[in-house]
Image (cartoon, rainbow, N blue to C red; front, side, top):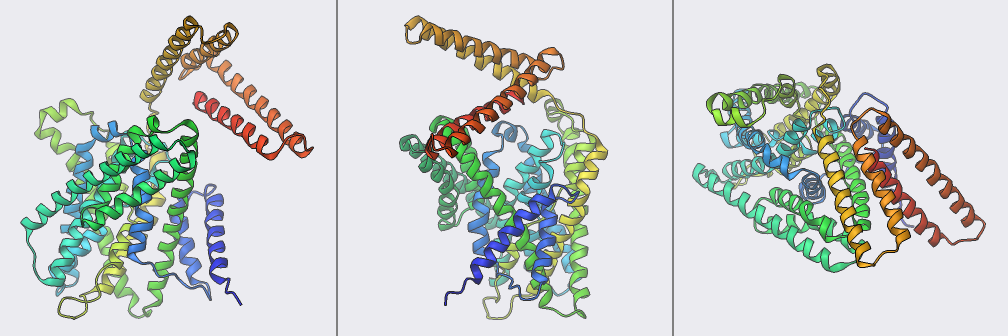
Length: 529
């Protein structure tokens, strides 16, 4: 008889994720924290088998699409404008944190080899891309803070993994070279970026020749995995390959595919990233419960104590580094002080406090080898796992749960510069459409009736653009028209459903017309915002 238990377990897991999402939005606890706690509780239930989390599975299944999507939705202009603070966090802070943790680990475990201590520092040094985006991006935070945090989380994994691999190799073989490590870092980074750009270029070229919506969506899904596999085969930075590929694809996808492909791809990617994020944090909680089961209550305090110390070191180093890295360059370089905006103390404090650890730290800890080159056990491997899990839980719960109250207390002023840019873009786009319409009228390729109707629509778009960001009668009229349009669309939808139910039209006709209504609703929603 067929064993359906794995299928039932999968259904239960998906149901749990959906329930957590549905109820989590009503609670003050950030979704990642809620999902980790649910994983802890789920793994503690009798009869529940905790899945073995393979590092290769984490690195290949979860990370490529998450990094690619994060890069795809990152503004290249803003990333470039903030490359100095991003670099100071993603490279400078990772190195400083790794060294600091290594010294504290040697103090806690006096006979721990330096290479193992550095490996621990590299494991816990990078804040998690998933956790940062999941907690901060949904809160009223200055745009520059979000750009810096997301940019840091895109690059810091690459620098941490280079340090990690160098330290583990030194621990296993007993050979270490600083010069070789530095050359390796720049070589890995450079070749990884080139692979990502090449993957993005090939994806765009294929999408331009496909002319099929589903194939184009599948191409965007294949991109991150191709970039990751090629980079891994060449032993260079797969992280930066995905980041570079995502950034490149974002720049050219709009000219390569049509509107339907873009709408479908966005929906598919939103669902995929949501599901992967939720699964990651639930699995994190389950892994910690499994780790607790492997030890006794008598030895638990001695294993958790170092993790708490290291967690406090992680928080303290960042709290010191961020203000120093923010203000010192401005004192030392008049050009930086003159050209870059001065961040507020509240923004600096928020960046300093946002440093949750996550799945990358766990995967790298689990990837530690079991033995050294001489066959002896890898030193302090179990202690490193406990320290890593403790740091993940500590930063997620303590910092994740305090971010929202902290942001509310800061009361950041609403930003309006993006509204001005949006208004300018809408006006210029409407003017260009008007010019194109008049050219078509002169060429005789459009009827007078169609031209009159389109001119009226363009006038309304211009009026909406002038109303954007204002609080007068024009904005009120725009909102009133939006509400009326929504009411009309819903009436059309109800009629179409009735015609389908009465057998007057087929499901295919319903889907086609309903999709047109949905696209129109999306356009109306974009205009309203």
